[in-house]
Image (cartoon, rainbow, N blue to C red):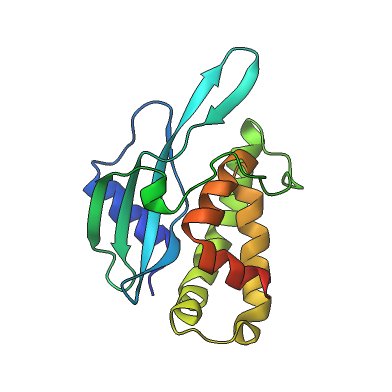
Length: 173
């Protein structure tokens, strides 16, 4: 399985290297499709609101990435329902324990994303093989902790619903 960094790099190269203003991409997560595991990246808008933090809208585009090669299998408009997101306003994950604002967010990503990327190939392969979560328990718990720190809480329902099986797998660790 490829790492989240390699999947993100493949996506950005195929997409021209950047997103539109106020758009963000999710961390690539594994999803089962037709019996195979692919990596999913969702694109959503962060709508600026004067005097309040930006709020996310449900994903409106997505990329499906081959989990072994990094090839883009599909990219284009998607409705939340097509991604398995039936309740975009569902209860989010708890707020991160680290400060996630301004420069601290950059520091947080620089510290945590490399470790998340390091853990992802083995964890994604175990998930794909339907290996018992106990086989990757420590890695699964660490990955789940890191992703909860990096994902803005209002975006977490998108992950939980679009990659429901994977996040259930992590929670069993």
